[in-house]
Length: 277
Image (tube, rainbow, N blue to C red; front, top):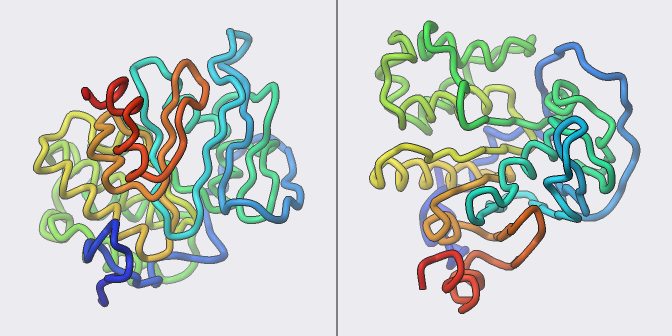
């Protein structure tokens, strides 16, 4: 695999092998709502645009919040606890109803689609918890990620094993016996088995050591450099912004700061308020 050297922000971390991406996108055909996607040409590859809403009949958590990511980018959502970071991600995935705003993916307005139908449109979503089948082996977890597919999945599985070599070594081991970082690799690998159009990660480094966090971030960079957009929520704000092409700082469900990862790291207000000076 060739290394992508042209991006000064990412140096030589990651590659530009497009083989793991799928322009058509696939996903799981689970039962869901009957909303339709509508043409929505133009704009970023994925955008949750001016989203206002909350869970059920509860109070709004998001207030005109906008997050977006383009092909080959890493976009991160950071902010204090209770800022609505994970809620914004779940809103993009269709897990709460929007009173205002829209979600558009690859030229379509998918605001009316259920999460299951958004997966079929090409969203790969990795929740923070309960994101693997602990009693199944690593290989069985990856196979579960691809159960919708009727083509040969072996090439994609080899790509996942190339991305996460430890999973190849432990392919027969129950996923529940793995370390926290290895479980996260299984969860990301399972999402990649659908050959998604966009990868969405909710707190992928929660509870792992700094060394494991760095390794996971390196693999996330590698995925993005293959051309696959990555949108993620992160508590480790400084480290996440260091790898981000685009960053969104949320406060109380609103956009407080938006910019490149580098610009946000250099912003005195962001540094003082969210990064410890």
